[in-house]
Length: 78
Image (cartoon, rainbow, N blue to C red; front, top):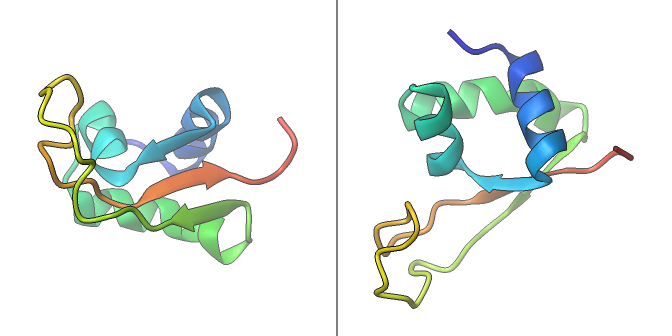
């Protein structure tokens, strides 16, 4: 099971990632992933960037499936 510390490391390496991408990476559902992000949101270390309802692409080359979830970005210096 992933920990908030694992999420910190992941976001520092990737700079930003969608909730769905992180959930897939860590093998958890979106609700669990949200709970893992919460401590960093509360400390203002992570910023939530709301995404549009669709990425506007039908390429199938990303994991969004046409419906992009919120994106999260690490806010402190790397």
